[in-house]
Image 1 (cartoon, rainbow, N blue to C red):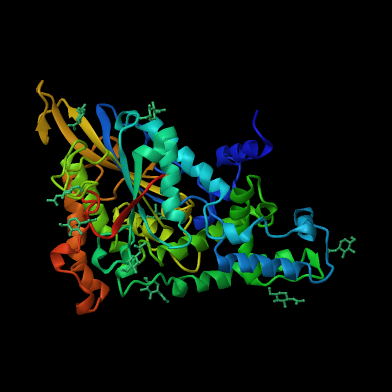
Image 2 (image 1 turned 90 degrees about the vertical axis):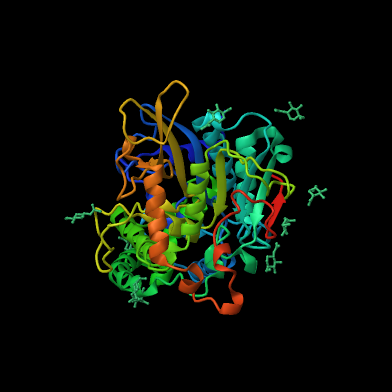
Length: 482
Ligand SMILES: *[C@@H]1O[C@H](CO)[C@@H](O)[C@H](O)[C@H]1NC(C)=O
Ligand SMILES: *[C@@H]1O[C@H](CO)[C@@H](O)[C@H](O)[C@H]1NC(C)=O
Ligand SMILES: *[C@@H]1O[C@H](CO)[C@@H](O)[C@H](O)[C@H]1NC(C)=O
Ligand SMILES: *[C@@H]1O[C@H](CO)[C@@H](O)[C@H](O)[C@H]1NC(C)=O
Ligand SMILES: *[C@@H]1O[C@H](CO)[C@@H](O)[C@H](O)[C@H]1NC(C)=O
Ligand SMILES: *[C@@H]1O[C@H](CO)[C@@H](O)[C@H](O)[C@H]1NC(C)=O
Ligand SMILES: *[C@@H]1O[C@H](CO)[C@@H](O)[C@H](O)[C@H]1NC(C)=O
Ligand SMILES: *[C@@H]1O[C@H](CO)[C@@H](O)[C@H](O)[C@H]1NC(C)=O
Ligand SMILES: *[C@@H]1O[C@H](CO)[C@@H](O)[C@H](O)[C@H]1NC(C)=O
């Protein structure tokens, strides 16, 4: 029998867009959900094609707040309870007894939450179900995670929890998560967070978000304050409500009362504020940040070109041994990197720039659908058998012509590459996708020069590229067990 909490989680996980679900419109604060099929493309392998290799980059799972956000919740609670107040609005009645939901802040702050444990374990199982041919029981499994924080290792822990779902009871003995130290000076362009060694990197969307905030927030603050007597919220207080909606729900396993405070149209405006925040912070609206994950994408496509059975001469777990990586390339990082990678894929090339004074209603760029908690960008290598002669990359023994294609998915929904979707299921031929990404890299130019790194901090130009996906001997990798 399901517990109440499990049933509630299932209820918020499966609710559809037919009934507005605020938890699916909170940008980076949304708990994970399967992305909407915006382009109406079947996520299954197209007819005549099979998926024989997959790579994904995932944000860590749902988590507890960081210190600053938690302190904000405590201050909000103190403000609410500083004096008596009244309200006639039933959706605000909970304020009389509200307090932050953390039960053990010292151990919880910045770590993966229970909702995150569930997302990640489920994710591991889902990937086995989706791609049953990519792994069989008790094979060694190697994956990667960005080091992120030394003392709040939510990204590494996300990798470990994914591995437990993917590998099952023997995960600890058969799995290894290679932690990539993105602050080691040798790791320029060769980590899961290369922005950390890019001097010019700045996730600074403010100039493009404050205008919208000054337009959309005052009426919401006025409406909510008009429902209260003896308590008056600032705009800054008010913007924490949708954030609390997302966080409290995944921390406790039941829907947060904050989810009912903003109306549907107000949440839609918050969602747009989150889109502006990512679009102009690390996403397609930037000219530097949107290119920083190109070395990683190039390396994935190199692995796809080498194929699912490739063996690399050295760089295995013993450094000088050969390495045959798993056909599922599993990696974990943070929202900034997922946002940067989404921009690098080419999916949003040609997308209209987001206006900063009004909502662009028909946009396909939505941060919620890219980098919610556990937000995942995956790449499928499709091997398709073609009956028509023409472009093909190889012929199998019985004379059938086979061709490789790539498909990009955001949270399991297919997003075609804007300039390359001629293949089955609007996929992009692998060779064409590699050319497209190479052209982007060439247009970006020298990575370290664009980043403005000091000469003394640079690595030789030929080393500023991603190789950790086939070389485990790099000095800034270290393996941990799931
Ligand atoms: C786990 O590993 C042990 C030792 O190799 C093996 O005997 C056992 O069958 C494995 N368990 C599962 C569930 O695969
Ligand atoms: C990562 O690299 C930095 C810079 O070299 C170093 O100070 C730090 O100790 C390394 N962290 C780990 C976990 O190896
Ligand atoms: C808006 O974002 C773009 C791209 O990052 C940037 O060039 C521009 O300066 C920003 N506008 C303001 C007013 O900060
Ligand atoms: C609540 O309703 C009562 C009675 O109608 C009214 O006097 C009071 O002003 C209302 N309070 C608020 C906060 O709206
Ligand atoms: C309540 O807060 C709003 C800003 O959120 C402010 O404009 C207003 O003056 C405040 N009202 C009172 C009675 O303090
Ligand atoms: C990889 O190896 C497996 C197992 O031998 C085989 O079934 C599959 O066809 C191979 N795939 C490619 C693309 O060579
Ligand atoms: C290769 O690795 C093994 C095991 O780690 C080690 O014993 C051996 O000395 C290494 N050989 C070379 C040539 O580095
Ligand atoms: C949205 O609609 C406008 C025309 O109203 C069009 O120019 C634009 O390309 C559309 N944007 C998207 C993302 O479909
Ligand atoms: C692996 O071998 C290379 C070349 O000998 C060496 O530079 C590197 O430090 C080694 N890596 C590890 C993790 O031992």
